[in-house]
Structures are given as structure tokens and as C-alpha cells.
Image 1 (spheres, rainbow, N blue to C red):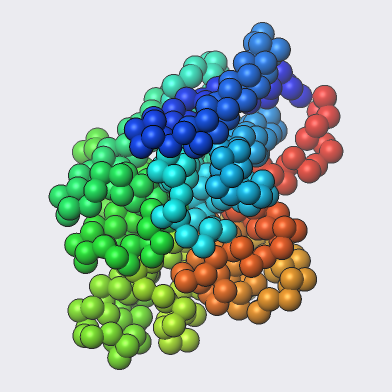
Image 2 (spheres, rainbow, N blue to C red):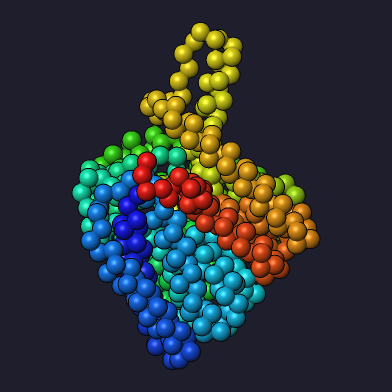
Amino acid sequence: MNRAIIGKTLGLLLLLECVFLLPGGAVCLLYGEGGALAATLETMAVAALLGAALWLLCRNADRHFYAREGFLITGLGWIVLSLVGALPFWLSGEIPSYVDAVFEVISGFTTTGASILPAVEGMSRGLLFWRSFTHWLGGMGILVFLLAVVPMGKGGYSLHILRAESPGPSVGKLVPKMRQTAAILYGIYVALTVLDVLFLLLGGMPLFDSLGTAFGTAGTGGFGVKNDSMAGYSPYLQGVCTVFMALFGVNFSVYFLVLVGKARQAFRSEELRVYLCLLLGATVIITCNTVAQRPGFRDAFHHAAFTVSSIMTTTGFSTVNFDLWPQLSRSILLVLMVCGACAGSTGGGIKTVRLVLVIKSLRAKLRQFLHPRSVNLVRVEDRVIPDETIQGVNTFLAAYCAILILSFLLLSLDGLSLETNISATLACLNNIGPGLDLVGPAGNYAVFSAGSKVVLMLDMLLGRLEIFPLLAMLSPHTWRKAG
């Protein structure tokens, strides 16, 4: 195993995190927040020293690496960045418990949006900015950013990192060169984020709020800059977020195809059609189910559309306390938590394309039972899906269910309600944030013990990295020098 390339890449990531902390430090300086600025500068020093030491020790590393190194770089990278990224909150005293600070930052980087904070408006602006900025960094992927700006060598080895960090059953390159693919992805990401900020500014939202909201929307994270999330903003601003949350839940390859003049091919995507149908269908049903609780149909549709877009894209913003909705609407939201957004987007969940593949695979197996001699292939958009991809989806779902059950049982040791435990597990494993009951839009995750918070942190990482990079870290075979 190429341990040196792992150390060198971790060093580069820590140096990159040092740079990422600069905007938050600048905000602290702008608002005269001395304590938060000192904590940010101390964290930057720690990140710079550790990063430089790792890079210097491993600077002559062979650039050739394979899948297991890609998994380890991704898993270790996200853990190290989270452990260091939590320091400003802890050193400043704004989150006194280091475990809680790590929980908050992991929730940020994984774009989960689950919080242990009962109120955020009392935080320093600089750390509130860093908290929201972690969403934006984690949305497209920190390692994807590294691939876009730092040459990782020839031979296609960077694809192992992209596959480990990017969501979906299969990941490929948009263009022949890996670095160009990463740059295109981030180019689209930045352009949509800027557009989101502009529309929010046009609605009269202050610049600081616009940036924080856009970071949460783009990363589909959901950390708000207000205690009531999005409830206090105008219907126009809530509508902007509804649209952009849905847009960031779309596979970014669709936008690439539109940009290169292949719009017809882009809109033939079965995953896109299923995604839009689920969004619209759930919105209509919830509107009809909640209209009696709202002033009128239009208001019910407005909040139903916002909530469905927020939950299905795993953003987690809220305009109303949906935990007070009828049981049917709340049940639909739980189902949407599992479904998630499209593969290749910034959203979480098991991904719409996996649902498509599972349904098509079941149909093919049923036909095979009825007509044993027939050949039944799984096709998506006239392309035959390899058996390896179907097997990978089945393996992912099996691991997903096992982790879900184990996490739920471990959380149950705290003695909280069944609804709290199951929704918290689903919300963290699918990177959503708010759940139901004690962890609903009006609650937070401070109710859990330190041990349960560690379980939920692991769930957030497992969900964002789609399970296998972290599981690979636990396998002794991964760490062997040969084989």
C-alpha cells in the first residue's frame, strides 16, 4: 500500500483547510470579534503545522495509487478535517464541549445540518460564517476541490478519489482528463451558488444572510443563520430556496449536457424524471393533507413545496414545524428522507437512481421467474446496466439497512422516544438534519448522550461517503503492504 501518498494528500488537505478558514477570520476581523478571531488563527496555525509536517515527510511519495488508497484518503481526510475544523468553536468557548464541536462540524462538512445548538443568533458572525461555509465545502466534496486545483499525477489515479467521495452507484469522468472533470463540476457549483446569492439579494436579504443561506442551499446542508431557519423570511426568499434546493438535487452531469448543447439527452434522464415526479407528487399530497391547518391552498402548497424540496434534497431548512403536520404528511417526509436526491448532486439519501435500478431489477427477476429461458436485462435510458452495478446497489442497500438498525438500537440506550431515535438515525445517515419529535425543526440533537452523538457522527460520515470508504478503513486487508 502507498502510505506516503495518503500522508501527503492529508497534508495538502490540512493546508487547504487553513486557506478555507481565512474568510471566517476576515469576517471576525470585520465585526471586531477578538475571541473568535484568536480561535480561528490558532486553528489555522494547527492546520498549517500539521499539514506542512505531513507534506514534508511524504513529499517524495509515488503518485501511483489504487482504490484502497483512494478509500483511505477519503475516509481519513474527512475525519482529520472535521477534528481540526471543530477547534474554532471549542477554543473560542462558543461550544464548550469538544465532542459537540466535532458533531457540529461533521454535520457541516457532511451537509447534514443536524445541530446541538439551541440558538445560533448569539454566535459570533465569523464562526457562524465558518459553520455555514463547511456546508458549501462539503457539498461538492473537499477532495474534488483538491483534484480541481492540485495536479495529482497522470494515469487516471485521481478517479479512485472521485469515486470514493462522489455519491451514486457509479462515477465517471465528464471529459477525458480527471482534473478537468473536477474543475467543470466546481465551475457549475460556483455558478449556481452565485446565481442563488443574487436572487436572494434581489429579495432584500442582507449579504451575510444571503451567503450563509446560499452555502446551505448549495451544499444541501441546512445550517441557518437565524434561530427559526427560513421561517422569518419573505415568501419570495423562501420560494428562491425551494427552487435552488431542487436544482442542487439534480445530477450535475445534466447541467454539463445542457452546457454542451445536449439538452435533449439531458432531459431524457430517467433519474431526473423520477426525481421530479416524486417532488411534485409528494408536494401535491402533502398540500391536500395540510390545507386544513393553513390559511388557504396557496399557503399550504408554498410550505409543502418548500418542505418536500428541503427534505428530499436532504437540505434541512424549514419554514414551519412539520412535526405538527398530520401523520400521512410526516410519514411521506420519512420516506423522502430515505429516497434522497439524484446521484452526482450535492444531496444525500440512497439516491433516486438506486430506486430506479432496484425497481427495474425486481421486474427483471420477476420476468425471469415467469419465463426461465428468457433473457432479462436491466436497462436505463437504453443502456444495459452491468451486473456488477446491480450487485453494488444490492450490497449498498444491505449495508445501509444493517447500519440503520445497529445505530437505532445504540441510540435506544438513551431512553428517548421511538420516533426521536428512528428519525434521528434516518436524518443523520441520509444527511438531512431535522427529524421528528425531539429532533424536529423546533428541537436539536443536544438531547443525546456523548456516546449517541458519536454514533450519529459516524452515521453522517457513512451517509456522505456512501458507507464503503469508512468500512474499508476497518478492514485489516486494507492496511496490508502487499496484495
